Length: 485
Picture 1 (cartoon, one colour):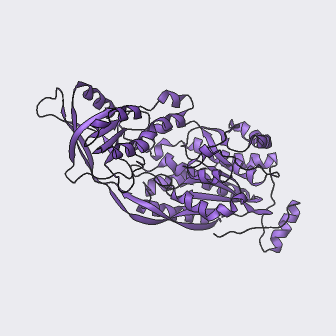
Picture 2 (cartoon, one colour):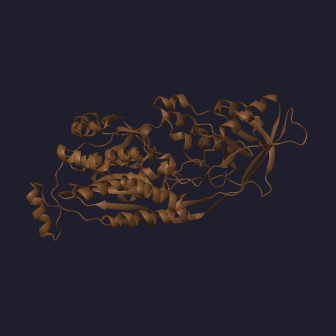
Picture 3 (cartoon, rainbow, N blue to C red):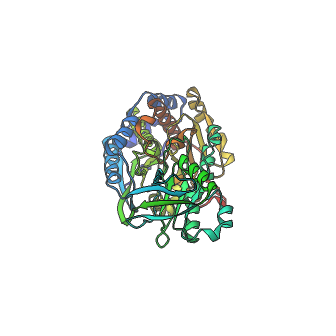
């Protein structure tokens, strides 16, 4: 990777400027974590719509960006050019990514107790990433409805040759009370583990109730977890259709005609976009700030995760406009393939594992653009006292909360975290995030510019603070059960 590193000792602003001039590079003094400097960063971010403009570019101009697609390739080019334009040092890190393409998808309930002659009912669904295909003409099979893994196992003798539906509802009340991630975790296991179990038990196909709230008859896609050799047809159905099938199954036998024709193509060439803002006397140490560049193919991925990428990009834009130079190198990463493989994160980890200790901290923004209240982190308990200055800088915008956990497990950072790199992620109101997550409705109109400005402010102040801290903050201490994806 291209890195421009500075090794001159950081003593005074005058010495920093002199060192830069001797090297042929004139740059502003590093103001460090002075409260006035932190306030300048915060206030500059709150006045700028640069991140909103980049979000609009990714969504309105490109659209969906699933790994391996033309949209993903265009996004790599667009983000790289935007970061070069503001003066960052850009590296494209090659990544081989899955290339799954959606085909035809339709479903009709063709037999059920009490069905009037000649009538059938359409089911709204979307294939899950990695799904296998039916024959071109589709398949017709009986549907069995289960509500948890225990029920699936109890009905194992009925599974072979049938369509299994997991009807497990997203708990919106949990989401409304600040536990959206936990609510999602409770249901998304059926989209991954459930599909594999059904395949192993001989199911003809598997359906899952959509993993999200706001029951507007929207199917929520996502990765199925199915692999070559066991790719049965798999789809997410809307909550309304899942409930309908549950009611009809109680009346008697229920049959569906299902057509899904996705393709799994050979792996494609793609890239992580890495943009460095070189540091001064601690330039060989790195603070990552990031979001993921790919999105699912149903919509434009505005909240998942164009806003995350754009807010990370805007950190460097904010600092460059202020002419502030960090002590540590700030590295913006637009990760590729977070959604259906995590290969971009793995490639980066493999390339940097031996210098993991040079990664001071890493931030990822990947839970939408709702109101931000501060940061979550996996720094050690003893390091928490070092962030008083950060909290003071964010208090005027009511975003001074700092929550600690042993493991964050954030999408693209889980490997780095397991390698000891303390992780950070914005603390966001995600109560409505899963209304549109992985659906055709994840579009720019769902993003509020004023909230995105707040994201940039929190990200920029936190990144700067980390890049200029005097004392080390230690390493993440991830217990064995917290490791892995």
